[in-house]
Image (cartoon, rainbow, N blue to C red; front, side, top):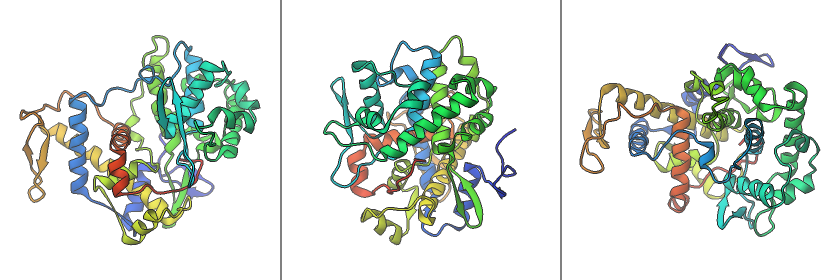
Length: 379
C-alpha cells in the first residue's frame, strides 16, 4: 500500500513529499515558483539525457565506492553513507575537503572519500553492523577528518545516527540491509516505510496546520540501492521498482540553490537578505519549509513538462515562447533532437541533474545566490 495522505502518524494526517510541495506552495509567503522557468529548465534536462550526460544510476562508476564487495557488503556500505548524508557545509573559518588518490573532494563526496581512504589505507572494518554498533565518536571523527584536520560538522549526532541505524538493522532485519530490500517486494513505497522505521530518516515538518514530509535521505537511499544492485546478476530483480515516480526530488540545501540560480525559484527580499547574511534557518521554521516545499513543487513541474514534451513528439533544444507556450526548435548543433526514444526520466533524475549542475557551476552559482544554512540530521 502506497504512502498516501490517508497515512496516519501521531494523530496527524501526513502528506507525502509530493503532496507536501503542493500544500506548501498554496500559501507560501517567501518563495515563489516560476512555471515558465521550470519549463525551460526541463528542456535542459532532456537535452542532457539525449546527449548522454545523464545515464542510468551506476554504483561501480563512482571511484569512491569500493569494488569487490558482495551485494550484502555493498548494501551496508550504501546504507552507512546515507545514514550520514547530511549537513556538510563547514562552519565559519573551517573547511571540509578530503583528498583521495590525488583528487580533492568537497561535501558529501568528501565524506565518501574519507571512508574510502580508511577502507583502503587502514583496512578499517567500516560498513559492518558490528562496527556501526560499537564505533565511538573519536574513531568516527578521526576517519572523517578533512585534509587540514577539521572535523565534519555534527560529529556527535553522526555517531548517534550510526549507532541507532546499526541497532535497527541488528534487531529488526538480522543485521542485513539487503534483507530490507528483499522485504520491500519491488515496491518503493513499502521500501520507504521500512526505512522510516529507522528514526534518523523521519524528515517531517508542519506547515499551515498540516503535517508535511520531505524524506530527503530516505528517498536517496532508495535511489542509491537501485544503483548498487541494478548490475547484480543475483539480486537486480530486487530493485525492479515500478513506482519510483511516486518519489520526489531530494529536498536539501544545494538543489534549491540551483533552482534559484535557474530562476525556477524566486525568494522574497526578506528571505534573500537572510541568506546573503548567512543567517541560520531553523529546521522546521516557515522559511526553511517553504524553500524545501517549493523545490519539490518546482521539480514536479519540470517532470510534468518533460512528460508533456515527450508525449508531443520529437523536439530539439529550444526556446520557449512565453506567450504561446510553443517551442522553437533550436538544437545545440543546429539539428533536431528526438526525445521520444530517450530513457524514462523521473523526479529523482531531475534532482541528480540539478545537483550536478550546481557542482559544475559552483563558483558562478555561489556568486549569485547563497544556499540556505540549516543544521539538521535530515539533510
